[in-house]
Length: 317
Image 1 (cartoon, rainbow, N blue to C red):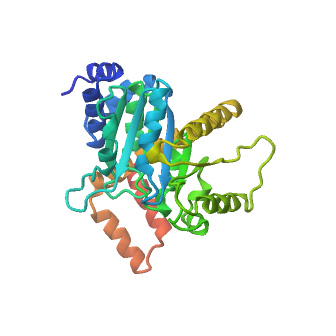
Image 2 (image 1 turned 60 degrees about the vertical axis):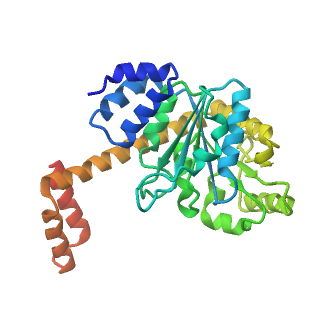
């Protein structure tokens, strides 16, 4: 058994091995996970969580690394969750993001963790909310969550972050494709990366046009800015940080920050509860009760809603 209070205390001191051990307990759904979360709960709620999403190839990892550099210059402790697609063979993360962030590997005020999606849709690992809590409790001022880059299912990042950055790049597809993917509906800050390429200005104009279509904003509402960057050269990254700080201040002033964090907590509770219910279905009935209900539905003896009510009643009754 692990001494959880001692491990949490070490993480608070900024010891990378302790932080890594806590995240491993989260990812592995350790029997001590409830004890870990109970110990972390009073220490959380201070970090600014920024999500980065966009199509593959737009430079998310390079932009994340550039943002780490910018925040470190401001004296911030930074945590990075780089969510990689799972290997179909090992089930583990491919770790491509960590390779691109080697320049921060020796900085004790930066913690970088690659996590595997393990087949979970939405661009995030299932355990990402708990991992964010670990980094928050460990004293990170800013937590950057970089998602897989799988297009249409990436909108889940908006539910996990205080502010969502959507990255695009010239030559990576037009704004209509981005709108179809749903990512134009979730951004708080838009970044056109690789702005030294031909077509960057056109991409920014098209993006501005797409954002203006059908918008109905009241006075005082947030209008997402569009920032052009060359992340590999650290160009424009200061403007991105400035846009993030403005968005954070806007959210804090009008109650949006508290509202987003409340929704995030509610979704996390719901996900844990639903997972627990699935486990109870399995432990109490195996597949036999469900199979019997499925057979009745297939034969027209029972409708699917009544079958679902029966299944729920068998667990909660």
